[in-house]
Image (tube, one colour):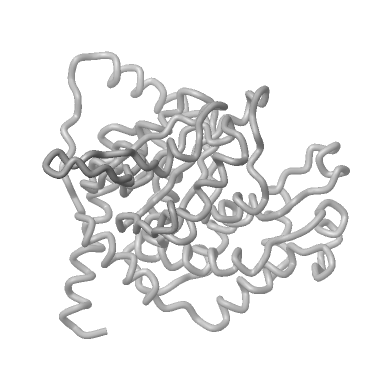
Length: 327
């Protein structure tokens, strides 16, 4: 990396704490969740947010897109939502001069930089599948033509963990497309008190734009250049392989897991560890990056068996055991 490039990157990285401060003007607490969403953005992946209603999931995503000057669209998933409502559809248009009629593709709400897929598990699998190509290929195919999505591109999907009536659980193939599976918890007593005081008056915080689209693309490029040692890559490989019952040295995994994480999990953990290093203004990965991000990277890529479900074993418990077992 040339010195001029390094100076430019250092300037961009120095703005990341400012970005967190801007988001913090609106979102009280949830610092770990904000970090993980920003890590997904820097790593160029998508994330699934799970939390009960009222934890400001939508507001968090909207605030982040405002501070980044990124085009934001929200899609409310419902049982009657169709794929065309997401990706767009063709409409018949008439040329007023010639009178000739032709079909034109009318782009849907997925053509934005940040797309909030609200309550994604409320829509049938056919509509959920409409997201797959966009998430993986960064394009939409309609009528035999490809339409590139804007870059940077981030899908943040939400789901409610407590209300399961009338929902369609995401299939494993689609879950694996999400880089991170982030769980939101209730705020602390002090944080909730601040929320009550700051959100029920007349004052509204004014957000400044910290990073442009081009800045984010440059930071995504930087993320892939962050150094990670051969030993840490081997460590990640051992963690992922240890999550598979057939390969695992852990009796705990053999007892509770139906199947473990695939190679994409290892790729995700490497990229996310690099992104966390950038967010921490470092240019090298440390073991803590891997151990912290193992939970959101692996929790949707490990399937528990019936015995584990019956006894209340969670994937987070399995991941904790993995990190204890794998040295």
